[in-house]
Image (cartoon, rainbow, N blue to C red; front, side, top):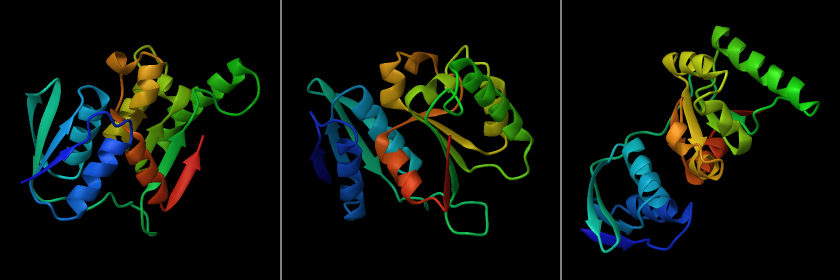
Length: 192
């Protein structure tokens, strides 16, 4: 079993290093990393790809053992190749007054579940993560989207910045590697 030490590396380097090792056909891989975001990001990345993950404390950090076979990448439901991805970079829609922008975003997200075709994945970054946190006016609409198969992912660094990680109310937490991979691999990206 190969061992990979990614302690001290910041996002997205731990995930990128693990991805490269797995793509090199290392089979079972033991990853030594820092606790917190690196541990969470690598675990989510590996589990999202179909690998089993065993964790154990290791010298002030953690060791994750990844095993199994990868599952296929996310494919879109439309006729063109790749998923339809929506990037939500703000808690407002448009560049006008703040109050109007927040009202427009709320109305947009509350209308979205009523449409026939939905995005495959919605990525929330910057102040967009505030929409997925407890107390947001649009949590019910986001839950409806999740129930219809839309994958909702909020940037972990952004949630940490706004101190909202513990109050995430819809979807899951992701990292910059997954965000970049989703945008580059999309058949279409809608940016809000």
